[in-house]
Image (tube, rainbow, N blue to C red; front, top):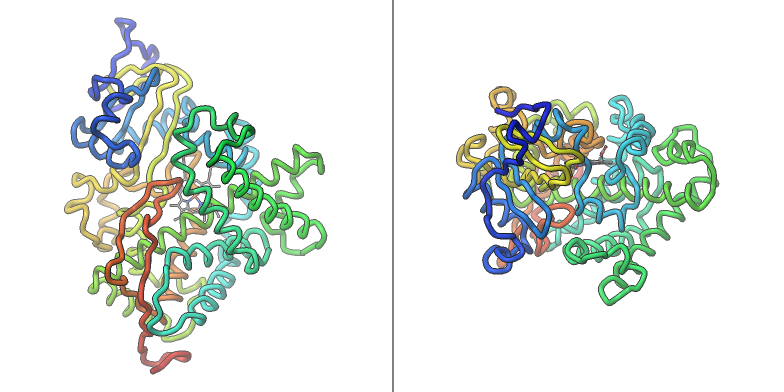
Length: 466
Ligand code: HEM
């Protein structure tokens, strides 16, 4: 279906664009499509034009892809011809030049330096801290209380990243950090749409001043953490120790680079997992049969003791629940790339600088790959079903050289946290709670996730037998 050719302009020397909006989107969008929610736009493009759609915003050509072959082509086969697109570049205002936003040699070096912390052999070490934090969280909760689980999951995963990867206890600062990041997330769509925001940030009009304040608060926590780390020496090298060792000196440029790398891992490593967990609790609460099976598995496999690393391979249904939850509500809901040179996709010849957009949210809900797509069904992730599925139709962690470095970490954390919290608690959505995904940097529940806690009665359980 897709092939690369030597001369992308083709024999006639002309670009050949896929079908799509005839009018410039600036005009169409304001009339009909509510661009404030890009998922609605993407779903419309997939329904109206199929696997590949084209439109223009101003001078920019944009492609939206909704077929696994095209997705593979961009992320893997022709990967050398693509860099991250403009909205990702805009996140540099928060993340600086960390692993998510950097390109080329700088990206390669950063990824290489961080790799040992994500090595298979290191991952089991982190399991203890993950479960300890989950147990501490679950033991603070009271039967019958109503909590916003979206906030609880954020605090829990933020603490876990701090302890596992940065060997730092952030419990006293977690509120401040999460609050500052929330403020920035609230401004995210505004920042993405604002022309020349990188420049305006120095002038600080209203809105951007709030961004600058929040970024300063985050920086203060990060710099404190780096300084505290310099003061002490530990035998077990954390990711931060590795970053410090790779940092050439204490010049402002090195300090800035260190800050960028730390904040990138923080943000990438906690928001995503927290959202995956919030959506999973919601989906389980709406699907009692799956919830019951999930409870049966953790009760059977753990018999009341806290889970540990060795339990993960036995918690198969729990993993299937998490996988299905990330199909319906993928924390990374879309990815964007920009072409460096002219290129070809199937029969289409496209110019350099074209923006290419791909959405996990849209493709993972396509009935061709997932029949009855809006139904929550963890059975889609049995080993047999996975083996049958078209490759690149499910890609919550991306693919190719920029595939998520934290994927193994995230699977283990997700399964352990679901098991540890689900052992003790059952969650029911509070009546009247609105549930809607909000596509920011990650896919957050727009109105939070308020749930009522119910203590589970479990036979043979050491801690909370009723
Ligand atoms: C459910 C959890 C997670 C999801 C769904 C997720 C998703 C993704 C996706 C889709 C990408 C690729 C983005 C692109 O190609 O444009 C990515 C990259 C990345 N992720 Fe994750 N992620 C998760 C957890 C984590 C964790 C736990 C960490 C670290 C502790 C992490 C660190 C990163 C980093 C550093 C990158 C950039 C990699 C590179 O460009 O080389 N992620 N993630």
